[in-house]
Length: 120
Image 1 (cartoon, rainbow, N blue to C red):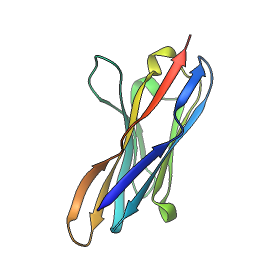
Image 2 (image 1 turned 60 degrees about the horizontal axis):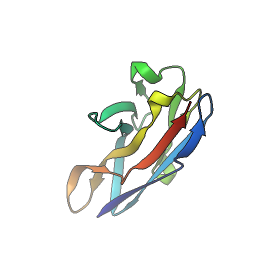
Image 3 (image 1 turned 135 degrees about the vertical axis):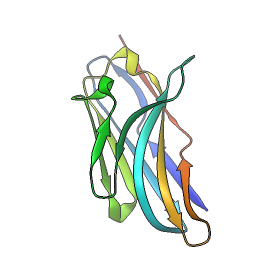
Image 4 (image 1 turned 180 degrees about the vertical axis):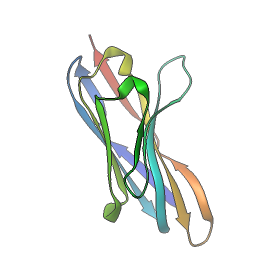
């Protein structure tokens, strides 16, 4: 079994910064792409950023230039540095990862979510 545990959410004023972390643990053979999604109240979950095992990144237009995704492959951990936060960034942020396990092969896993609230 694989678990993704997020941390780092909280309340911040507009213009401030937060750093989210997400660590994958369990019977992991290899972690491929990792990413962050978010879901605001009344809205669908949307992609924020992704990063491959080789370090290639992709961002939603709404966060380009403000957010930076990175990872530590040795720790199976992905990070999201969020700068210049706006009230519209308020959402529950979820990490996900494509993980190979010895028993189950390849599958997608999700964290439990961490709340980010940006006050105006």
